[in-house]
Structures are given as C-alpha cells and as structure tokens.
Length: 356
Ligand SMILES: Nc1ncnc2c1ncn2[C@@H]1O[C@H](COP(=O)(O)OP(=O)(O)OP(=O)(O)O)[C@@H](O)[C@H]1O
Ligand SMILES: [Mg+2]
Image 1: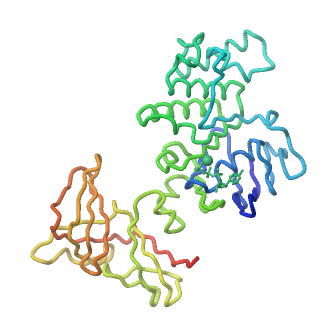
Image 2: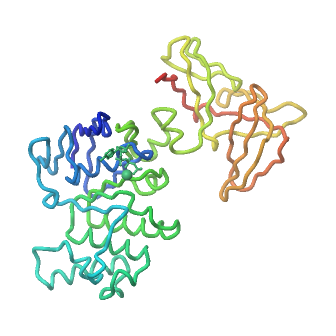
Image 3: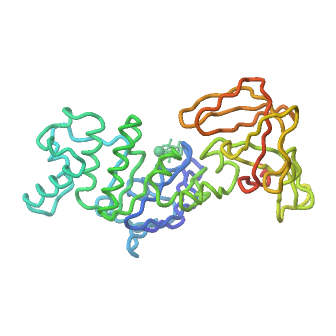
C-alpha cells in the first residue's frame, strides 16, 4: 500500500500534513507520535471512513482513493482493529469471528474460525459469548475476527492499550506472529516508543501532522533527526553551546559541529545511559581523552532504583544545571556525593537550535 501526500485540514489546521508512506506485505510499520499529532486521522482516511483534502492511496498499483474517486471502505480489503473494538454481545465467539466471512460455505467458515481461535488459544470458548471472556480474551477474539477474511492490509490503532502490561506483551507477540504468518501488511498506530520498537520493522515518527523521520527502529533510535526525536524515545540531557570554527565549546570539552556556521547556537543532546561516571579522587577525575572529552564534576541530587537500571541525577558544578545518568543494576550513591561525568563523543547529537 502506498499513501501519497495525504492532507487533512480541520478547522483551518493541517492535522495531517503531506504524509507519504509505503507499507509492505509481512511487515509492520508503526506510526509513532505524541497524542494529537494526527495518527488516527491518517488511519481513518486509509480505512475510508474519513475523506482526505488531498492525496492518494494506492494498493497493488491500483488507485483506491483520491479526492474524486473512492473505493468504499468495505471493498478496500483492509482489516481494522481499533482500541475501542467491540464484539457483538449477542453473537457467540464463533459467530463474531465469522462475521466478516461472506463468500464462503458454512464448512469453510467453520474451518477458518476454528483455525484462528486455535491460533489465539481460545478454541475452548468457540461456543461461548463475549461476556464470559476477560478483556484480554475479548481482544484476541477481536483480532481473530479482523484477520478472518484474510485482509492483505491491517490497520491497528493502539489495539493493545486497554490491556495490563504483562498480558499485553503476550498478546502483542502472538498478534505479531499471526500477522507475519498471514503475510499481512500492517500499519500500527501507537504513542509508545517501547511498543513501536518491539513491534515495528519500520517506524514512521510523526509530529504535528508530518512524518519527521522514518526507518528501522535501530536507525530511528540511534540517528534521530532532532532534539525532540531523541527526547521522544528516552530521557535526554541537553547542553547549550555556540559554534566557533566548526567546534562547540562546553564544560565537557569541544564537540565537532561540521558544516555549522560560526555563531550558531546548538544543542548537544545525549541520553542518560551514555553518560560515563567516575569516582571523585580528592577533587580530580579521569584524564580527558579524544573520544570521551573532558570530565566535569557534579553532585548527586538523588538516585533511584528503576528495576533493571538506576537513575542518578547530578547538579553540575559548572552551571548548577541537572544532568541525568543511568547505570545498569543497582547503583545508589548518596545525595551530596561528588562524581565526574564524561560524555562519549560517538553518542552525542549536535543540533542547531531552531527558533520557532
Ligand atoms: N473531527 C474533528 N474535529 C476537530 N478536530 C479534530 C477532529 N478529528 C481530529 N481532530 C484534531 O486533529 C488532531 C489529530 O487528531 P488524531 O486523533 O489524529 O490524533 P492522534 O495522533 O491519533 O492522537 P492520540 O494519540 O491521542 O490518539 C487533534 O488535535 C484533534 O483534536
Ligand atoms: Mg489516536
């Protein structure tokens, strides 16, 4: 499926602003972005339940929808699974799953229903009713229902958000396996980076109606396009600096800013897990190196144990600002303790400050 230059204007605001995307069979593409950035609106236009102001949707090289021509939603071969999925309460589990199966015999229907219920591990409920199922079980039935007609494209809008964490991981992985098995092209909307990293082959990062970055999870995480893209995936530390001779001078030493004109304000952005910590030995820290730069001293403000890591906040000697560092496992230095922080160069991002 190819989406070309989709635009949706609501009350004079470009809620979806020139979005283009390609989605491939057997692949999960995640539309990831903060609340209100236009994810659901994009999905609704693709599903055909909302009309775009401009742009086109193509499937298999055939036009499905532009501003003049439109294939009606039910004939697009697109499966939908939304957060507020609703099973039909008066229909049995089997009939719910069979609901979208039209042009096939009763035996074929039954076989497909059994196959899918078995796959989501709910065959024992085949003749039960929705009210007899837990929330997670209902969600799996809804999944089976949306997959029953073998849609080649599946649109999912935060389909796992109603579930508790542990249940969610299991259902997410099962869903993913099922979709891959059926070679479905999936567009999954979420505002949670962890979910996107877990599910996606490709992430399209969306902000203010636009896709600001697209790529494999690893690339989007390790080569963010701007400060907000860093901060969307994790905590981010930011140092302000000014460029002089393609170098930005900071208390952590100089950072390369190739191609950035003299006098430009830049943000040097780095994640807490990349900050290196050293103990304070009578007021001195480690020696500067080319890769790690110059150490700067800070005082522990607080330290918290987060489960798989510890988060330590420092008040820096150089300007009193707070920087965060995370350390694997348990590391809980007492508040007031001084330590030296270094910032490895290959883990930092230097972005010119954009004044909006
Ligand atoms: N029918 C409408 N009337 C007015 N504003 C709308 C309408 N539909 C969407 N919007 C606005 O468009 C923007 C994008 O909405 P959308 O539902 O696509 O966001 P989203 O990215 O899905 O957010 P969330 O993660 O919270 O679900 C929001 O600011 C929303 O208020
Ligand atoms: Mg939404």
